[in-house]
Length: 148
Image 1 (cartoon, helix red, strand yellow):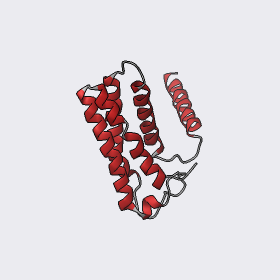
Image 2 (cartoon, rainbow, N blue to C red; image 1 turned 30 degrees about the vertical axis):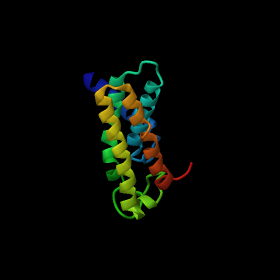
Image 3 (spheres, helix red, strand yellow; image 1 turned 90 degrees about the horizontal axis):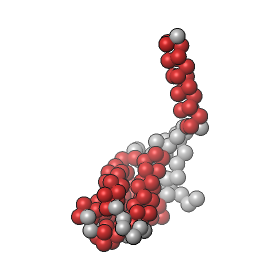
Image 4 (cartoon, rainbow, N blue to C red; image 1 turned 120 degrees about the vertical axis):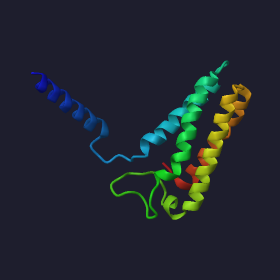
């Protein structure tokens, strides 16, 4: 009985995973980019408040900074996207790796400044630093992401 119940739970879990994944190859970077967007959105929403929580901003800034520093490694190889994986990346990421790494480094620098500002607890410094993240993010998008 216990073994049968365990098998049912395992099958149900696998079915749920398959249903959520849509049954197709998912871009392994997608979850990381969604985490960047989620953290960035949380920071922006928090900073709109009259009394923003610097602790919440700091936690999200840490997430952003960690992901930003990993970003260049999300595009391995020198030939292009992985077969069977949908991507919004332009071929320029692989064709111009030096330029891509420089743009990614600007994003990482901006997130590092934000993380350092959040560590001070000074809301004015945090807001000033946060203002630099969007343009750094956009710099990569403009050059290395396909238009939607």
